[in-house]
Length: 253
Image (tube, rainbow, N blue to C red; front, side, top):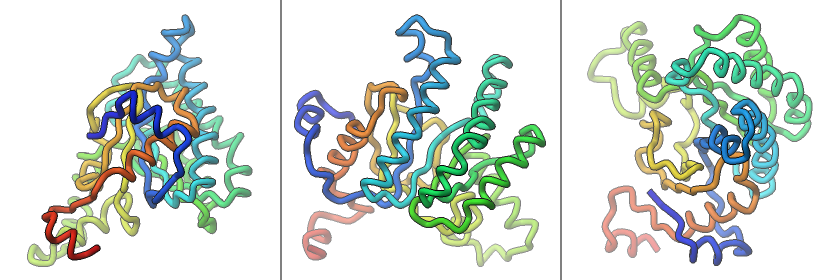
């Protein structure tokens, strides 16, 4: 996992964007702590975090990122206080109502990663509508991981394979990959986690096998365009090996 030093952060502030990762995934962490540090209720942290997402989507479009996957609500988040869970559900519903038209106009295709069965029927309909309404867009794919868990995703994929009666000798990594929520999409090149935590938290645990990880102490509401630029600049300093030796990589250059 990449943890930026103060020197790296200072040097990357105005650095060129370099090679842009095709698929960026973000664990948007720290909304509650952001609010607490300002003497505000947690609800305000979630609202500010939602507002910040608009800026990051625009930055991704500007930088040329093709796929953005955000961790909006995990299967473990149901354990939070009921009032906070209801707030998070309301925020997503509000975002769909408020932002859908602009996202569509800007060429953003929305996809849902996760289960719908625990979500209220009215929100289920809005999620499905948003995905269908923007399905024709191709400027940026926005994967919203909502009621999502990486382990559960693999379990659901295996269950589908079993239900379809696929023979054991035909089950490969490529086949299982097609049955995941992200089936048909490339794995994330870069996974970012805000707020300083150094855990994957059950997020894209299959897809992130060879992703570059970047952790920043910045809380999500403060993770702006420049912070994204720093993350991409750091990504450009890494050599992606995929299990290869230095000699093999040198031959490919």
